[in-house]
Image (cartoon, rainbow, N blue to C red; front, side):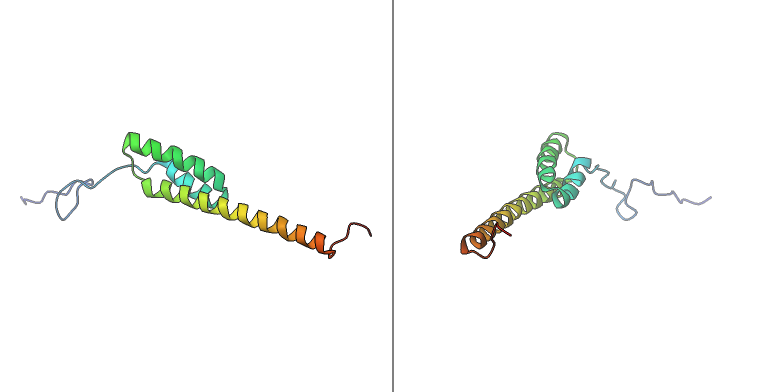
Length: 102
């Protein structure tokens, strides 16, 4: 007989200590995706995910934070671009470059 004992699947083969099996918060992943695609959705889901992570101790805090930050940055950039576009159109109308009559 041999003294070989297989390592359980949840243990590290080098230390024998159990590896972390924490779940990643699903809403944190959704927040990251929405932060890029629909920034307002990323902000909302990110804040909800951060509160869930604080309460449950799940993984994914970085994902939720990234989704929230990306959502805020893209929202601010969208507002700045919209204001610049409206100002550009207003300046063109005032200078006579764009006329309303055919």
